[in-house]
Length: 365
Image (cartoon, rainbow, N blue to C red):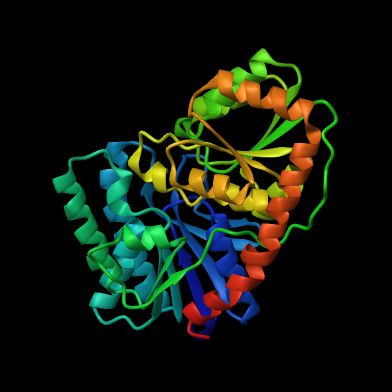
């Protein structure tokens, strides 16, 4: 790799997320060599890999999803990132999450010269169920780490406001909208097909979906996602009328989702960060031209209602979801009309081509 034309993308995940992949594609279009530095999230993963055409190098120790592994694995991952940067000295660093920025900040603090983008998916202080006093400390830490970045990327204005009192010198809002998958209108044929892409977690309403398909033979689920623990994966694979694809590229997921009638995007509002979710799923629904089902008491619910592109229900209420299914199956034209409205909104305001130039500017191009 040519270090003068090298862009490294760093995240404590196993593979690039859709948000990261879009940055990778822009860097490639500009003639950069790219590599993704991730974490070793399970014992069956290899240190070096290729995913969706992207070379991957996994650093640090085994980084499982528990408090103990997080407290030990995070600093080791950060130090590993620092030494990798010291050896390779890339021209551009795109770091997602505070955990990735730790090693980058140390590299910059000790004189490393590189153009740094800090990509904030979730505000650090809101990810943990800790007292407000601790949240303030975590917020200050995020602002300190983030001060070493030349550009700070956030998915929406709320994420930017939540960084207060820190005000990044050069923030850029890049919504989680996907590249255009093409619009394929669909008529409901008497079975409601629900598409549930994204991160696998019990706080994303999967038990509600599971109860629904166990009660009804006129509902089918299509699930594309990764990052979940073995228990949730086993649960989803056991459900009737369900196709489970695991973690696939966003392009593949949208191709799969085009066969569905509606997109499901639940976030447990008891978890603070969930209330501000800037969901890939909502933008996926717009791009596909499908209505989205979201739950109440999260920020995006009011937006979905205002734009008329979906339905808002109480979280963890199987009866309410089942009643909506009855309504949609009895009024299939409602699905079609709302889907066309969603697609029109995507084309007018959220096409990826609208935001792609911002990524180029963020890279300093």
